[in-house]
Length: 183
Image 1 (spheres, one colour):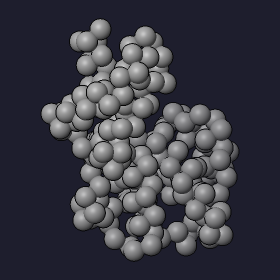
Image 2 (tube, helix red, strand yellow):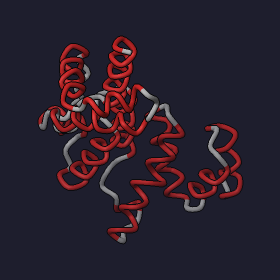
Image 3 (cartoon, rainbow, N blue to C red):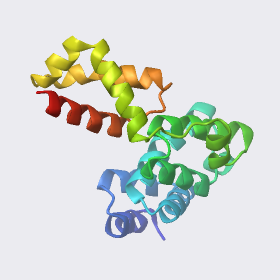
C-alpha cells in the first residue's frame, strides 16, 4: 500500500483528519504502529494523538527509530483505554508510558503497584470539594458569578490534596452541583 493510499484509508476507515492521516502514513513503520494502537484501543483519534504526540516526541528526543521504541502498540492502547475508563488521567498515562519504556513493566502493573488510579469516589471527593470551597470563598463567589477561571483555585486545591489523583471531571461536576445548590 502506497503512502497516499494509506492516508486515504486512514481518513475513510478511521475518520482521521487529513493532517493526522498524512503524518501517520509518511513512514510505513509509523503507520503500522498507529494502526495496531488504533485497533487495540478501539479509539483511532486518541491513537493518532498518542502516536503523533508522545511517541514521536520520544523518538525525536532519543533519536531512535520506531522499531527501537520499547513500548508496544498494545501497551499504548492499554493506556488509552485506562484513560477512557477513568482509571488514570492523561498526564498519569504519559508518566506510566515513560516507566514502561524505562522498566519494561506492563502499564496496569505500574498503575496498581504505584497506586496511580484516579480517585472517583464521589463521597470522598465531595468532602474535599466542600473543604476547598470553605478554604477559597472568593473563588466560590467569582465562579458563581460566572468567572470560569475561578474554578481553578478550588479544583487545584482538591488535586493538591489528592496528589493529582482526583478525577478532575468528577471534581468539576461536584463543584458545579455544590455551587448550584448554594446559589
